[in-house]
Image (cartoon, rainbow over all chains, first blue to last red; front, top):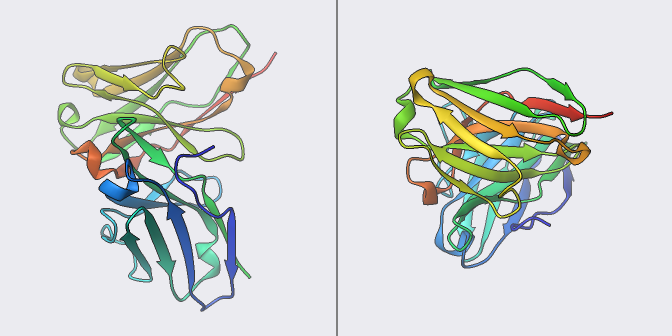
Length: 110
Length: 121
């Protein structure tokens, strides 16, 4: 049981937009930044979004992040087959004094 | 370029000990925490614990306290994760990664390539 809650799967057609939600509490998302990670099959996770809505160098602006209260959302526009991956949200939990992740969401581009 | 390079895959028997490594390069090793993350087969990411190489201060998540030991050798910019007696349930991919300087900023980058640990009789 992960501390952060994500939908197990989402799907959309190529070129379309998809959003992935991440729900937490005041001890984590509510009072700390949210980050998002992409894990392509057989590879290590890669940072996509940090501090709620910032993109590291090299991440296309098709990827966006937002946060409101104790929830966060990852948005991906112009879907490509290469976007098929597992996506994880993460944040710091002040009560646990540890990082926490969501259970992951599998994106299928139909 | 900031890089974390992990040791290779391991096949061990239950009860055996194991120490895997994570070699850091491209940044000041003593100025950043290192985190170990577990990913069991087909499952999500789990934060195991962190170490600050400057003084080897460690913090373990409750689920992993007493189950593993995290250490670091700043002279060779390498962090370690070790088990004294492996169980089949320790079979997983283990990633090392570098958290943000301010831990509560909550992001992790970069990640090592992962070490697959298989425990089977």
